[in-house]
Amino acid sequence: MTALLFILFAGLAIGCAISMVAQRNPLYGAISLIGVFISLACLYVMLAAPFIAAVQVIVYAGAIMVLVVFVIMLLNVEQEERSPTRLRSLIPIAVGLSAILFAEAAFIIFFVHTSPGTPTTNTSDIGLTSSIGAGLFTSYLLPFEITSLLLLMAIVGAMTLARRGGLLPPGAAIVPRDQVFSKELLDRREIGDLMPVTAHTTEEAERLLGVSREHHLSDHE
Amino acid sequence: MVPQLSWYLALSAVLFTIGVVGVIIKRNVISMFMCIELMLNAVNLTFVAFSSFFRDVSGQLFVFIVMTVAAAEASVGLGIIIAIFRNRESLDVDEASVLKL
Image 1 (cartoon, each protein chain N blue to C red):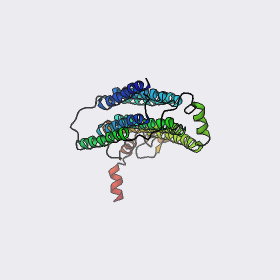
Image 2 (image 1 turned 30 degrees about the horizontal axis):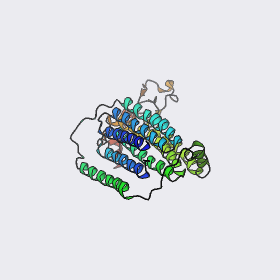
Image 3 (image 1 turned 90 degrees about the vertical axis):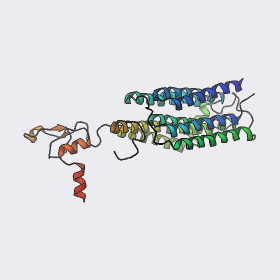
Image 4 (image 1 turned 60 degrees about the vertical axis):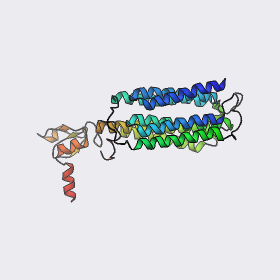
């Protein structure tokens, strides 16, 4: 019975994974990947790890895939066009690597018999939330704290990367042939007849200020 | 018949292989990103299988940390993808082979 369930979920996972790689539309690929995550969560339940299964569904199939689907829809990605690929030489390498990895899998199946016997039964407390919490806050406390630092760095990095406008603040006002001030610092009465303009990127500001990149280079030489 | 440890390891290897093939043959950044997520999940399956068969909770703690790293990677990676798309109007990795904007 459990073998039947394993074959069902494993087949579902492999089928969804192959479908993800075969799809040309990234949105369909994302939905196939959600199928992989769900079937892996079912396998975790079979391995008596209910906490990891719940986290798999919530974090992976929930949060991360919502983020990916959101970005796909935000960027309005069209179908991946079938263009003449420049990396055609990599296809035999990919086939060779996959053959090697499949050979390793076959080796594991047919020649390794020293695996321990049966998985834990439901009476075991491995994989319950309490044992995971106890392990996380005693022997693995330092990795846990480092993980929190990593998440903080990820938040700051994502905000910095996705920000529009580069170095200048979004509403920067630029007076030609003058200094760059943010809109709050700029006193309109001091400018006189100069007209403030708004630039959103550094290149635009450089162009408006008359300091182009080539000018810098020639100065350097 | 009860599923053996080797079954789970084989499934994990197959999923990882599919992820590697996807990263190599895909050209869309977001598709490559999802293939990387698939590889991380294959490794997670190995961890949970070993943890369950050896009756040791450490593997599941590793899975927890791997999931956190994957979430951080997702946020930063998607931020980079948005920045690339804003500068180049394309998601093709061949277009973005230079780090300079």
